Length: 112
Length: 118
Image (cartoon, rainbow over all chains, first blue to last red; front, side):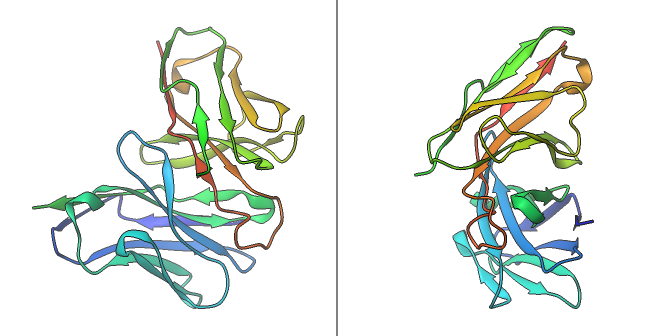
């Protein structure tokens, strides 16, 4: 069965510092992987997705993620954090028939 | 822009009341989903639907039912609300049931409905 584990429920970085949010997945088939972001009092919006092809995926707002099959990971990074990046981030894996399985979420705090 | 609209942002209900959460999408999407979001648990799938009048249970369907009479509308029903159903409810839709297809699995979410059951 597919599953997703996000390491760290809260991550705190200083403005301008590297952002690294960790995601590991379990899937019996080649996965489709996603990162979604949720700003306060809003629904989730797509940051980026991996389907096939290039393993380094670029998303919106300067975020990127690398699919590493050998490590079953799909970590999210951004070279320089902005205050506006403060939000909750969800990693997800696609199962058959279009369903997504989500991780527990990581809240990113950006300190000035 | 693709839009998913949830009719109520905040609801307060009493234990035992029947609760309807409505969701409408304007993108002609085939698939619609109801998730529940709780701190530390992420999003958990309650029910989903791939077509009109069709529904399938997700991971936590107990205490919930759904209705999809029209393609654009997917309703979540709590027959008798309980305090442990206090939560944020998120509706989402996606284009097709096709797998694999790069766009098929991208979910578009509504803003959420925060339900408090007293």
